Length: 449
Image (cartoon, rainbow, N blue to C red; front, side, top):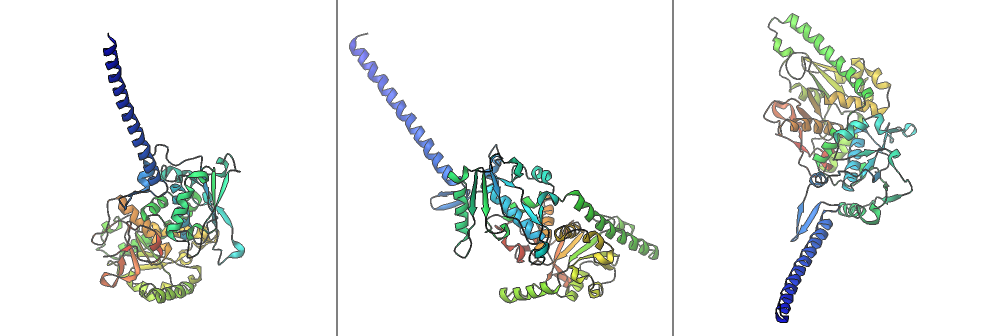
């Protein structure tokens, strides 16, 4: 090959190599650019900023796309969780979802056995696994949120204290940005982030109702507490069967199918009756501030509206979940419609079961008894009532039911503080599409007909 031919071949190869180099460099640059954009977009918020539009991505989709799921070598610690049972459940779920955003395992928090603002001298921390099943929680919530024990920590000196802001200037947006910054960089390098400051119930809420519902589904009572609830429910059903047998013997036209219908052969109604003095003071003030008049309900109003739910006169026990201060008030047991048999824990003869336990466990037992009822009736401005309805709505959702207004459903719920059809209470389902749980205690997350 002559020198001229070699020169041409060299130039040809050089051009090809140069073109290939440019192509490779262009591809590498493109990949690095996309990686930077995606990492910036997905960290913390789950939001892509593109052409001034926010495409909100579900945190669930983002985490489910990760093969490794929630990290088990990075942890989040939160302050002791306090107040009533359902406020504590909300606070716990909020802590779980915060840990989920940070892609960290939540260290098992301490709950509170009593209401500190009523029983300051009796405030006792109680471990989460003394109330709810630890392993069951992790099994049911696997890949969504994760609980860990302090014994899992490898180096307890690698702790970063994260101070939660407070006051009017600490807005929802500022709080989210604070969390976002803590999910990366030198803060994320620490084995444990310890949030100091306010009780998680008081944190800003960033999470949709569906995420809360998913956490609540994973909360299963320990056997000791669940069996106590079994005893109460069993006593209720025994009374129902006893009265129905008497009716069957008296009425020759008794329909045998009624005995075997619905969820069980001994259906009962549970009513969360909020008429104690401190509640009435609170709800009257709430009505004045909000301008809403359907918050408070008198005993007579509740009794009349519940009586209009059931058309049959077949004996049905109405379990009244009431404050201990009302156990000696005989007026809550009188004036009920024929066929409705009102019982509270004292008349039922199970008050001894409750007295063995601190406030938190007593409330957990009552919550379980109400949630298992064939029909539940509560106040849509009560956190206790609202979480029971949320749980029952989630069960119906699993069955493909999104509205209960026009059909008979297996777990119907009603709000006695809102007037419904035929002078009865309003049918009630949780609005699972709400973007936050903020409305849960203020009655606005109820779907009405």
